[in-house]
Length: 248
Image 1 (cartoon, rainbow, N blue to C red):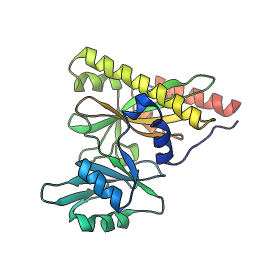
Image 2: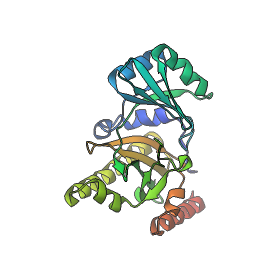
Image 3: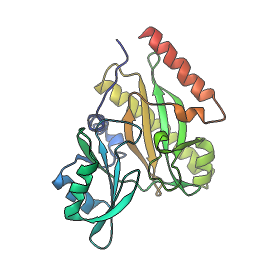
């Protein structure tokens, strides 16, 4: 069976939500419409609007609730403040043809003042899923997205966790939890979408030290791993990829 690619953020999110452990680590997500926009902004101070298909952080919009009955809407280029009745038209001006979803915003932990999250590369070269790569994505100054194509850069997980989490035991606990969530997510998606063998998982750490599974990509980029001084993870990813393309 050829290696399977699965498009659609929402269908993968729904699949992950079927698992009781993972469900607690998924931000609230709905299809975007006027009703869901109002409900989500009543429940969450920040939400993200994103295309159901696409990658690299393209088309993602951040909406922040302000105290004066106004809302700040930000794209990768600029921000502006609008009233609620202006919000949906402003969003639609930025939208492409893909359906859009709206997702609860996560208050990301910071490293050297910049927002961070984790990119985990899961691969299944034979019968078992393995973590082939794990890196921290650090947003560029002034940016709210950590994606490589939005200026994000790589940092080693161990170094960042030691800086963000002052206690070594706490850093170890978060790292272990990252591993558990990654393996469980891969196994759940494998059951729902037989034939997948590669996953890029984007997992956030919030400022309360809770992990959130933001997205699962079946065709992830690996450019961030080229930025790390230690190239062992990059070599492992490439070695597994070459093996899978020969065999499947």
